[in-house]
Image 1 (cartoon, rainbow, N blue to C red):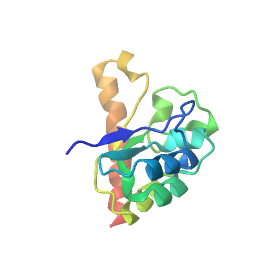
Image 2: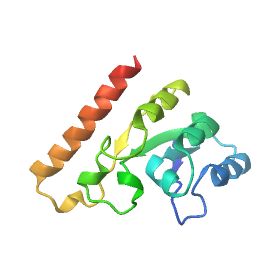
Image 3: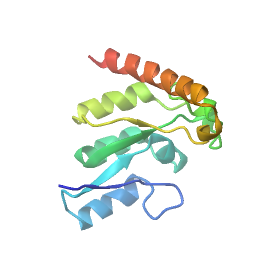
Image 4: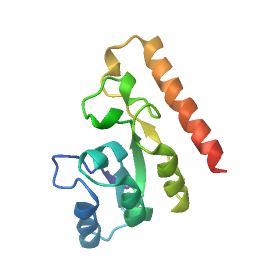
Length: 138
């Protein structure tokens, strides 16, 4: 009943669609899943929408944070989902199409140094944006 969720990441041996597919072919197990991280996929030169369509039901978790204007180093404020260049409405539509019904995890790298009130404000903006996108899917 335990699933190992692998996170494809730039600089790792598993980092995009082309490296995930052979892994899934070699290890055909219900205990192996893949994390969708659109920012890391884009950083690796991959398309998150292609990734979703090819990896499909093996996506068991998500890591969402935005990518400001193609730059990969970003302040926590620049990582807020909806402020950058990643196509989150289309990503959510693609996830709905494959029947994804699990959590959406929002990352905010570097925000741990902020006061809790500011962290909550950043999280609230992400939640509001994603909530609107999800309502538009219905």
